[in-house]
Length: 273
Figure 1 (tube, rainbow, N blue to C red):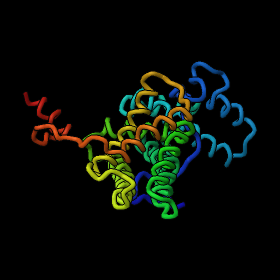
Figure 2 (figure 1 turned 30 degrees about the vertical axis):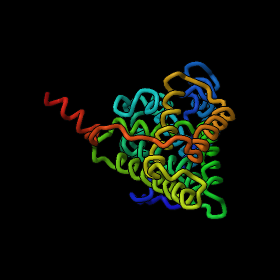
Figure 3 (figure 1 turned 180 degrees about the horizontal axis):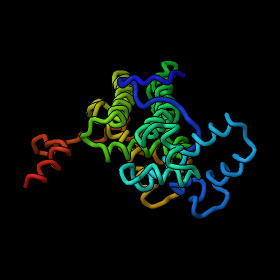
């Protein structure tokens, strides 16, 4: 897999560890267990070659950074905190990744591999019908939420903290979301053309709603420190989403209101009031 980033494609490529414990989804939080990811790394370092030590240290930095970015925010996290949690010096973080943003960009490569590529593989699979693609897309979302929650939450953090910014991380996240939305929309339009999906709603609106629903579920899990019962989650998603896509029992009506400004414009306007 190439390490180059194409802004039209999404986030980037793969690395190793995930801060599952940060979300209470699978393992305990680091402060709650002496046998967590970071402790295991410390024990292994004592018997590694230089090359293995470097690889493990880089993975430790990413695991620590993902945990901190997701649980306390990117802007509130310092390179010193990342180093401390990874049992390394602040200088080691700079040595491996250059800057805090460099760590974030490396984590976004992992989002590409853990989230975006599996989604695209399903959504672009022409051997499957539109309904089958959407079904598998929802099923895969459930598995990713269980296995790589940090990779699903990190783009949300970047979207909020870097809203309106022109940073490389913000551009990558926006491009990734737009790519998935485009592919979901294409599947919906195929389903609309074949009669499998309802045609009284905009495919673009439905695609955006599907994506925002996934983000909302992950935020609720983080907010409530919920453990994901992936089977129940997927069953509910499939029942609600697929039924909504396929059955038009009542024609929706528009709210009588003009199109509003963007969220950023509203917030910027508040600064001037």
